[in-house]
Length: 423
Image (cartoon, rainbow, N blue to C red; front, side, top):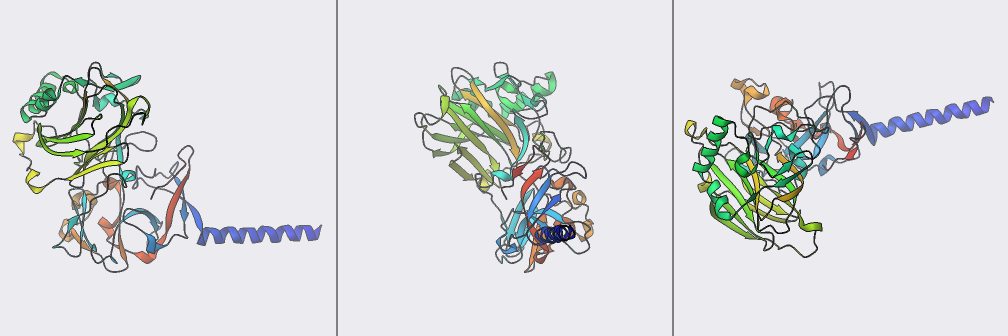
């Protein structure tokens, strides 16, 4: 009996040592304590995400936009943040956060906007509206015209008679008149389009479909939509968005594959994408993603056929100030040219991960604040996804790469939040 007990104690001791060794050198579970990485990771002292951190991951293998865990001297807890710049990269060791975008370069005089690929960086999109699946009624954010359906039972893209009517609706005069009508009469019908009721801000839907309060006062420009729609009998799918003072719209002809980019109703660029293949999707269902990201317009069909068009300097119009206040800031709107409305399968409106530099917004003494940061070799710059509520390198500066602990790989719980992390 004593021998059995002695063996059991020995096995338990060995198991305990192995378990602690695995936690120390291989992997460990971490509770996300705050909301600084919302909506990527749900943070709370009670009920926050529990993630498995891979401690075998190499710091040398880190890429821009990867999520990582760092341990810093003087910090009570480890930090889970996104890595956005490396001091060991001589071509991008200086950075600036400008109007919500990341600018990188070898020095302060040669900064260029970091431009994400719309397909490869889908996981960096922040959901702002989701149908179906949001815990919030989308009628508070989306104008649904008569005939476009019921947000609970089903939605459709409303129909327009022809492209001439669509072009006319994109002119400054038409947009201003519709905005005035909404203000004067409360006519929130979207002007015949499925359209956002208010500007897209830096708010977000968390993993439970609930709206976060942070960022609601910060209107953003890098916005877009991702939806699936039945295109049988549809002549054109119209995907528009306002970036004040201009209106931009992609006009896509599914049967032919050609796409036009309109500015205030006038065609300014064209692209030929593959036409729909017979039987490629049930009931002619197609996936469309479009928007504005890091200074570029993008349009993607079926998740793979991509058109990215850089906005040239001559297209960058200054905000007219008070004369332009009657124009929408960043309204998104959708419709089709077809005999009947086109049924939607799903719809998501999103914005980019935005990081702001304003010293008053991030709790830094303006007298000591420098918009351009230079990283030394062996340093990295960390940012939280929830920029309006994140303590990160904007406040405490670059951090040593040697403080790298590991990479979060899996959200272990709470159930049913369990999922693999893409970065």
